[in-house]
Length: 145
Image (cartoon, rainbow, N blue to C red):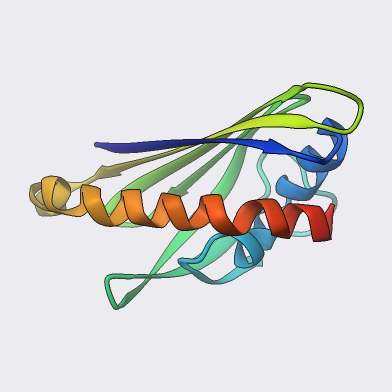
């Protein structure tokens, strides 16, 4: 399994930040690997909501179906799956003031079958992708929240 973690201090109130990030379709704005992310169910965003995410990684397109597994006042968990990987994106939040929120973003990838053999060779690429999220997410959240 590969796990990467990044921490942010954002000039956005906690409730606004969670409201922005709970719509995983916005990953197009803050995740540089996401090509498209489309909601496949209807109604308000809630635990169980599902998005189809298309990402580009190492020159290849891959699709995962992401489900909002947990939606708490200070925590979001999305789990994406396809035949070769299970991806878990966990976001934890802590209000530092009325207008500032600390966020921890943790992404984990568990490869299935023969794809597990590639795990050691992919860590550096996922670390680089996490660094790119660190650059894009604060601006996207500030504009969108």
